[in-house]
Length: 257
Image (cartoon, rainbow, N blue to C red):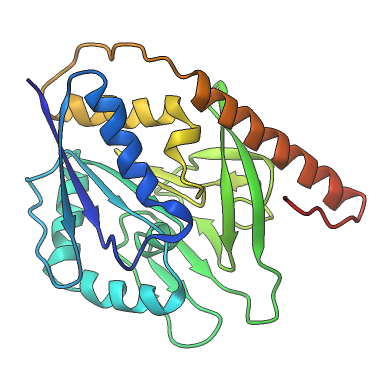
């Protein structure tokens, strides 16, 4: 039996908006296919084996949590994470985790937080009075769509060494200006899509699983699953994003009940 090894980084401090649901989704989709999953939770001060995992995940956190994580990643753990990505490991980083995998994050108040530089990007918060990028977000990914919920003050800008994950259909994305959302470098993916992301986007979850299994030595296609509920959730989120975008255009405040 193939075993998928997942590292869940900072589960107690980087877990906004149900980000742990991404891990549960990966576990469920693998186990329904008879694929064994071993999840290792790695917190502050705990080492990361750069060769020990096929997929690594870090979620979002507020600025005070990001300070702690930035300090932790400045040591050997950050080097191990960079080494793993360069060797082909799959990584998914959401919101605050996404920002810290870039070059730096400049918060609304305080000093810049150094990032790992895995993604050639930087994030700057315009200041405490700036409007947050918040609401349901829908983006074009390949020939399909991804949906989720975004809530971030920072504006992320991509450098030449990274490409956007997707293009914005409804919502703000990286910076509410250039129409980009997220970033991709090798098998590492960064995004502002919370919610959690993967349960409402089964095609993207399977994309990550497929990459991780290939790293583990399994190249057979994934068996199909009954994703009726997942796609219903996807369509509902897409509809909410569309309604919010319409409300912004006509100057209304759209409340999600």
